[in-house]
Length: 160
Image (cartoon, rainbow, N blue to C red; front, top):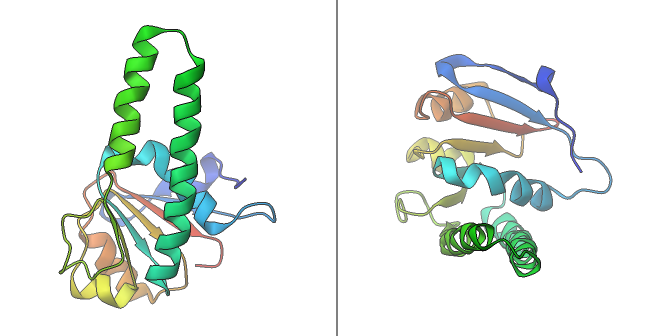
C-alpha cells in the first residue's frame, strides 16, 4: 500500500494539484497506479509518463483486471438492488476503458495513455490525471502540466 496524506497534496502551477506517492516494499508501481486510477477514471483521461510504455501498460492492465474482479465480487455479494445496478454500470465503464502505449498522436481517443515524456511533449495529452513514474526534466514537466485542465491531478512517484 502507498502512503499519501494531506501534506503531500498541494496547489501547483496552472491550478493543478500535485500528489507525491511513495511505494512501500509490498506495493508495485502497477498495483499502485491501477488502484489509484479506480476513483480517478470518472474524472477523465489518464496519462502515464514512463520510460517503458509497453511494459508498464501490460502490468497496469493486469492489475486493472484484478480491480475489475474485486468490483465484480462486491456486486455478486450484495443484495441491495440499487447497489447492484450501480456496480453493474461501474464494471461496464471499467471494462470499456481503452489503454494504449501508442503515440498520443496515433491514438488520441484512448482513455489511458502510456508514453515517454518526449512523446507527450511532442503530442501533449489532454488528461485530468497525470502519473509521472521516472525523473523528468523540469521544462518537460511544465509543458505537460500546461495542457491539463484546472484542478487536474499530477501524481509523482517517489524519486521523480
